[in-house]
Image 1 (cartoon, rainbow, N blue to C red):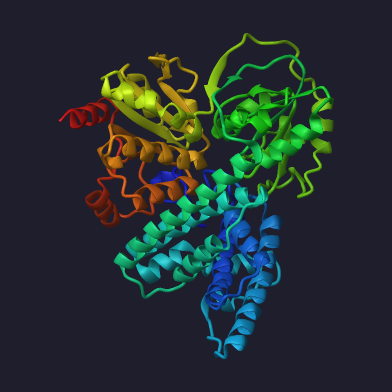
Image 2 (image 1 turned 120 degrees about the vertical axis):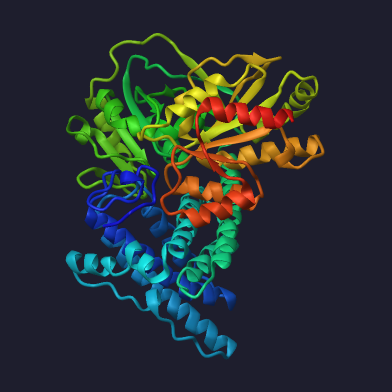
Length: 552
């Protein structure tokens, strides 16, 4: 195997024997093959779309299969084989769709090769051998590290955007034009005769695609559950039976809350589900009592200590420890071998039964609360007050300190950076990176909290909306605002967001804790020259450089 799509990859170069995430070589190779199969779907679907033909089922399969290859989603070879069969079926439907569209248009269909002509082998071992023939290492040999690395930058951005598109679809929101853009870009990745400049341009277009997908997901979340509003959330447990929900999917939480209402079970969020407490349509449930634990990488310790049932939605699962193996469940696309999976009907009865059978919390713990829910709707409602505070010199600078958390050393940088920000500065944060400092007391400036939790990783869209609105209020460009972005990345959704920021022309981003292994020195040089993107150094040095630059 060879995988370098996450930040924690072995030695910063690539996992070759076993994934740091827990992915075994079989699953890793099947995922490589699944990406190849999805490209075959899109070779036909892209050409069909150009002739005005589409099939929603084909689009759906493409999105699901891409999402299944995101880090910490699907570790189950049996499930991955099922996705490969689905991909082959979808590719055949896409071919027929394209041929029918050509027939109606009086055109002769192209004869397509590569992924479009792939046929799934019989049996697991044979599929693995097929996957080895389309690995990253094969492409590096064929294209060289710069071009193959840029292909992966685009591919990983597509994977992240697919995750957000899947969330939106599950809430009933989709746009055919966005699916068409996915297909076009996946088809583009099958071409080997493209230049570095063309790949860089396509990477920025992928950032635009992700921005549009995040906007769609924002409409989906707020359309179904209302605009997030500042909300106090208890972060210490209370007495009673319990279920903890981790991942990202609001609909799964909603379904669970409906099914547990009146059953004497308290529901807690975990990880990226924390922002759910701010949505009126979710926080109305009185048995949604708080948030348990922190970011995804601490789950093995936290779930071991949790005296109830555990539901993993979308992604972020780690290898379960034996003590809680029987009370952890997956749903959606997330899967781990041996863990019971809840199907698309969302009948969470087994989860409820496991919670009722477990001990639950035997006593209340001392209360501790934090505040979430500062999405663009809430922050922009106070825009006049914020602008006035800046003009009066009460707020000197804004720092967006956000992104993914992870177990790799160096992430204490973000805690220290937040702690060192001067008292006349405001911190915006989002995604699970906030767990590094979100329980600290930063106080307020004239009633404006110094720490504003914008939400999940996809709520980077909210942060962008906030920044653009402030730029309009100050009659300047976003890059001229007293605003600095200090980002941490882990997996492909963070890659998608980074591409979105670059597409929007945002400069001077500091990225860490280490740079992506798939971004070669030559490509980094281009990004540094065009966007002034740079790796983090130390909190003291970066903070001093930012504030000195802002003052000048």
